[in-house]
Length: 185
Image 1 (cartoon, rainbow, N blue to C red):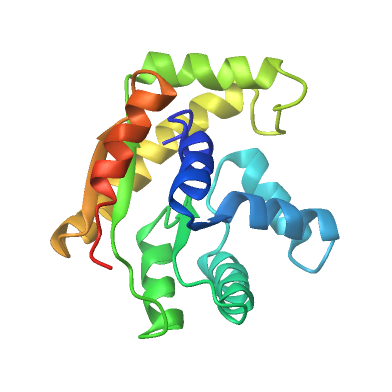
Image 2 (cartoon, rainbow, N blue to C red):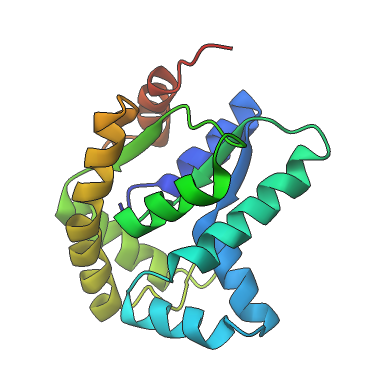
């Protein structure tokens, strides 16, 4: 969830395992910055800590996967997606057999520690984001818990869910992530 170190762990997976990383949130922020027809809606969703409509997010992800697949990339790490049952259903509908999901990792930890990490990031000018205010953080944590449960149930029913303890040093957490990512070639 928010503050669990998804971005850090994704960086380590890319650096040490050679996977191609895509952040659903970053793709949405880039789309918002471009100022296209969905930019205002994306900004409203981010400020209110609600989920951007699934079709917008899935279209951005699929376009990026296709772009990278054309240059020979075949292992993708999608950070921060799906965030709702609607996201998961839209993903299934739009990707079909084009993409095989190997697993879903849920980085989980103590709520107070996650809150502290997010507030700390918001105070660091280099890392701060528009959704790092105390009020938005509280909504993000609350909304994530409400929305993650049914999504995790989907992946659990498919035997694809890997829950990883996000507490500890970056290296300790990465060791647990590597174990979770032990996949057949």
